[in-house]
Each structure stands twice: as C-alpha cells, then as structure tokens.
Image (cartoon, rainbow, N blue to C red; front, side):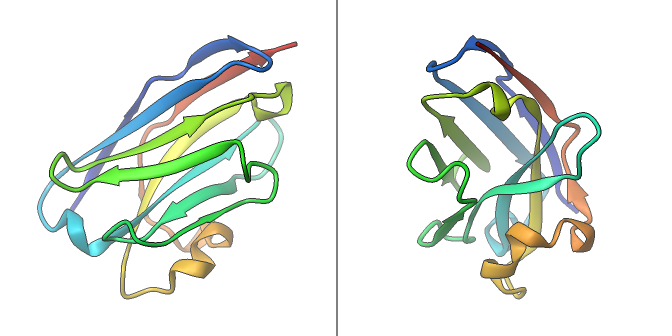
Length: 128
C-alpha cells in the first residue's frame, strides 16, 4: 500500500510560481496513475491534473491549463505540480492522489469519491 506525503505549499503573490511535491513510499509505485486535487474552504475537492503511471499522458482541469504542469519521476517515486501565473482563486489545500493504472486515466479528474489513496495535503495561498 502506498503512502503519500506532500510538501512545498506556501504563500505567494498573484502572478507568482510555486512547485509542490508528493513523495510516495511503498512498493509498486509504477502501477499507479497519480493526480493532484485541491479543496478550498466550503467547496468540494476538485481534480487539477493527472498523469499516467509511466508519465506519458496528462490531463488538466480547464481552470489550470497552460499554467500548471504535472510531472513524475518514477525513480524517486515523486510527482510534481509546477504552478505558474498563480491566481487568488488557486488558493486551496492541494492533495496528492493515486489510483491503479487499471482504471481509466481520463476519468480520474472527476473521480475523487472513488479514490482511496490520498496524502495529507499542502496548503497554497495566493494573495492579490
């Protein structure tokens, strides 16, 4: 069973950049598609970006396309989210998630309720 630990959150001004990181521990990391979700106070958890188990395919929420980039390093069992041109509406707690690659990648962004592997979250605050 994987365990996921996020880091790298913090405060940044609008227009700035931040990279958050999720490190996995446990075996068989390469069989998992990975994703970043976020949740703002009073709102549902929403998918931000997903990446296939071998890193060849990615999907993004429309709200972050062109600004955020998800990547992974399977040797380091790490997934990254590079966030550029941050906006105040990006303020949220960001969660790393994993789901076995046997499930369809394209549905992972909208499948928060079906995901059982989560990190503890890292908070990002973007000030105007």
